[in-house]
Image (cartoon, rainbow, N blue to C red; front, top):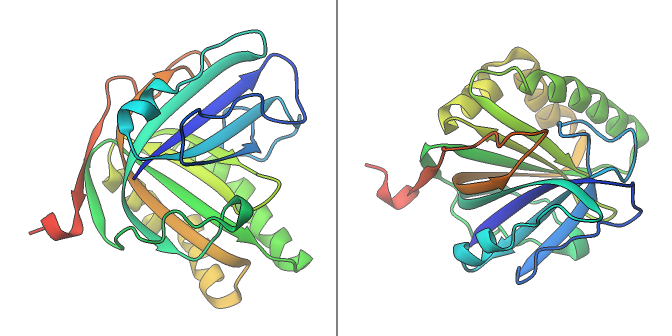
Length: 229
C-alpha cells in the first residue's frame, strides 16, 4: 500500500473539494487550515485530500496542477511502515488495519494521526482545545517540515506532519511536555472515541505549500519490522 496527502489552496472558497486523485483505491477530502495544523477559519479556502494506492508511480503522477479553481497544491507520496489504532475514515473505511504494528524509516518521514471525535461535547471540546495548542507548537519543533489537518464530513479528523527524520517526530511526540500530557490524558479520560497512528516513509513530493516545497530534496526508506536487527 501507498498513501498520498495533498494540500489544496483554492482561488475561491468552495463547499466541496474540486479535486480527487484519479486512480486511487480510496480517497477522502476534508476542509483544512491555511497551510497549517489548525482547524479552518475561512471554511472552503483550503482542503486536504488523503488517497491510498497500489502503485506509487500512479500516486506521484496524480498530483494536481494549479488552474482555474486551484491556486496552489502540494502533493506528497508515502509508503506506510506501521499503523496502530481503531479509527475509521469516511464511509467506515479502515484501509490501514493490516499494516504491521512496528516499523522504522531511514530518512524523511511523515506521521498521520486519526482522531475519532466523541459525541460527548465536554470531551470533544477538551480535545479540540489541546489540538489547537499543539498545532501551533509543532511548526517550531526541531526537524518539523510541515503540519496540516483534514476535517472531513464523515470519519476521523486527520493530521499530517512531515519530518526530517522519524526520530525527530518521535522525540517531539514523547518528550514535548504538552504533547506527552495530551497522550496521557487520552489514556485515562478518553477524550476521543477512537484513534490511529500511521508512520510513513516519504517517497516524493511535488508542488508548493505557501510558495515552497517543504520536502524538496528529502526522501525516506521504509525499514519494516521483520528487517529490524
